[in-house]
Image (cartoon, rainbow, N blue to C red):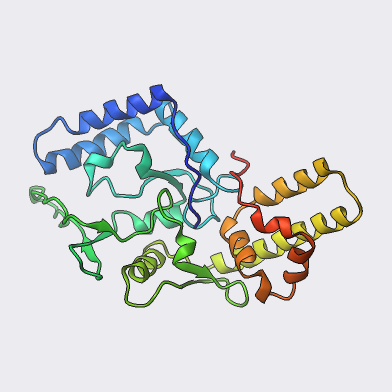
Length: 282
């Protein structure tokens, strides 16, 4: 899960989102605004809504590969995800920076799970509304406790600072942040909520590793044979547009420790400065 590219919306689209957000804030009271956020998001996030067509087009540009999920980088992203859940934060229901494109296997389990650090605590405070019971009136909701978010945000955070992908053995993420810190708590919480080590993601990452390595080897072979710069640029860009960009980031970071990578990066040291490009869309 890498930091997503910072892309903006067309001015008209951004203004329309602001108008939608103002509609959410018309009812008085938090409970009413939560209900309004659900209703309006369901209404406007439709195939025929021109604003959300544009929103999804920009979110697609931010994805890797063929519109892969912003969290797991593997499955097709087809759900506009609220990083801060709209059921807890209706004031963020139509905020552009609160959106990413996610897949069902990530977005479904995450749902409304969210936590914050209250005050100076290093322990996450889990947030949730009481569940409504059938045949009983909907409960009056309370605003969640204020604090800094625990979940790593792909629009704001470079998760590779606190999570490391083990490309030597398991292809699972491990927490690399200093133990007993907020950073470690954020990394652990994000791993658990999004299920980033669930099967078959490690297998897919291992296959991506093989693919990246094969593409880098091809680049080295053609460079050695004297291919023109234009051809090498095509090979570079093709490598940087495939899915699982975190695998590539970790290959660069740990290439000295991987016998099959070290000679390739020695032959093409420029590859250490190559950063993932937006994917092929779709």
